[in-house]
Length: 166
Image 1: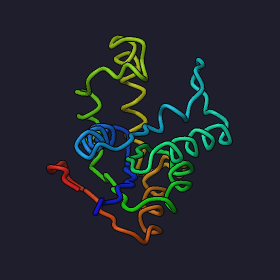
Image 2 (image 1 turned 135 degrees about the vertical axis):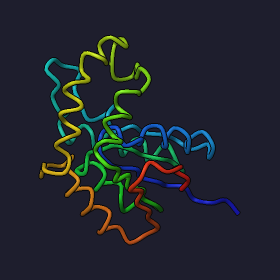
Image 3 (image 1 turned 90 degrees about the vertical axis):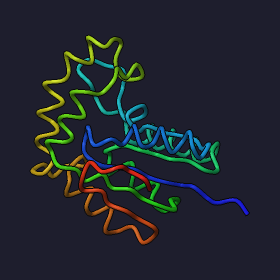
Image 4 (image 1 turned 120 degrees about the horizontal axis):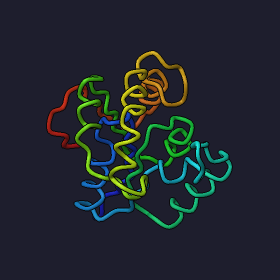
């Protein structure tokens, strides 16, 4: 009997979503969708992709992958995949941990043209992380908490930088 793996991981920037999703994708041999790759237009300054276009990408991904892990901080997009999910993981880590993780993250070539470009964005990212608990937008702790509470399937919330083993 095969196990269905349809996991959504969400939390603040720097909480470890991508690291955990990559590990789960590799160990479980399932598709991986980083919502950062479908949430933004390739523009300067950054601009959100029209929601309809992001939805099309998500629908295509779901059609192409029977089992998967999807990760991001976009409550508006995550809400669309919750009905298809078998499990959610909320990385609700302290701000200080998220900031340290952001400072030590490796270069993300799917997001930045160079490590230097990523480093140039670090101050803005840290400011963004610091606002997590007070924002009320789709990226906020409040929005993530609501997603977590709404989900009726298997779910886990991590609140410390412990070994993340779902």
